[in-house]
Length: 117
Image 1: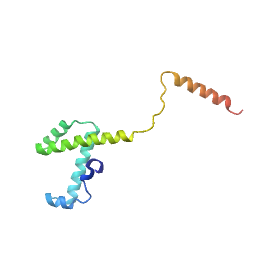
Image 2: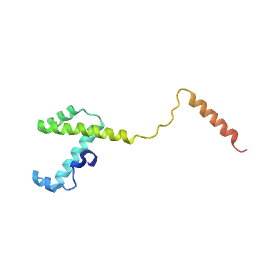
Image 3: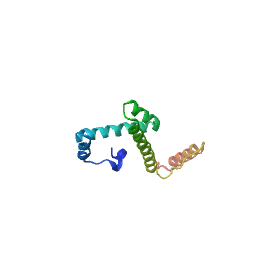
Image 4: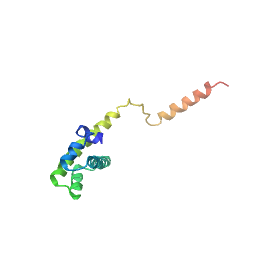
């Protein structure tokens, strides 16, 4: 929830729940469910248009679905950028072709010949 909803979500749902006529726990559970659905759809790379269509098919008003779809698209870009930032690991040398086999064989022979008898 925290990753998907960002700063707009707060721990205190009481005021907002009162405004929309819901219990705070019901509002919190609804937001968590929406965030879960959004994260799963982002995981399988569902396009914004399909997300909006799914919401409308589920009975959500077109303007509300469009608003959520826009948020969904922004969250997808944000999550992808965070994921690529997390992958900023120093590059590991890669062996190409058969060179790595030769180097591994030479290293193995050197270890065997240097081992004490």
